Length: 414
Image 1 (tube, rainbow, N blue to C red):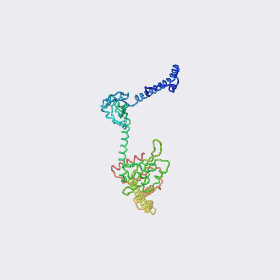
Image 2: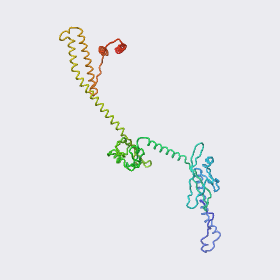
Image 3: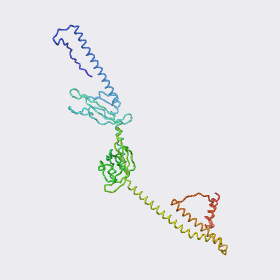
Image 4: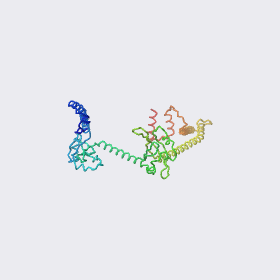
């Protein structure tokens, strides 16, 4: 705090009032009492000035790069931070001088602060950015005495701005590439943002939908969407399917997914943000698959019923063949006249039994497909099965028959 060098002269009241002159001792005593407060005030003022000077010095030394340039363009003051960037400014031909500072606006209404250009400096092999602010230092008559420059570091701010631009660009590219359109609403589900992809999906410009409630878009009222407005839970939702009319009046099916959005500072609920996926073609394919599956099941059921009915029809005459072959084989009604006939009757009976087994298998398959057959595990002798099959398969001296015998021997040994 500055103090005025001229102090008012202390005059005694008795002298002013025209009283009798005081003695020298009285005058000295009064002078001592009068000068004591003045000395204390001066000491206090000097201490305040030193504290302010210390504070200003610390702020300048620990602050951003700062310098003072006089009217001739010479640097008259620089803090430690400015000394650090001095060489980098010189390398970039950006040292402050009178020609670089330019003319200051004149007049009482002119702003004392102006923002200079950004500086890109190389410090210790790293690129750093600074924004210079200048302030005019004027004399009592308003003339320009010097200019103070403060170089604010903007490296982190620039990196943040670059990251924000990259994130925004990435989001914009993603919303343009994906088939879904992105939306955002307020707490009342009124649309506040719609991505441009909605034009391809519905034919509307995003501005035509902003301001409309999300609950108004479906052709039929969606209880799930309406419940989001009144629900205090504000829970995320998935796969809410609604039909929406496009600009040409066609019905399209969309699947909505959304997440609640909260204020990062207060935590207050702000609304929802989500996507809308056009699943019209997917639903049509699903319906076509369901219809094809039902048609295939119907055809398979008809086939099974046909086989079952035909098997029942075949079993009736087959039972007669089996019965008559047993009578002939046992010669119940008398001898057949030749032993060869008896062998033929045995072959007929065995073949009929085999055919009956096949028909029973067909009936079992029909029961399995109908879900009405119960499987049973039984111990079988593969030699009996191979022997029965062998009698039905003609034996010719060929390579396949040799392979057949080898396979039969392998099964029997197992």
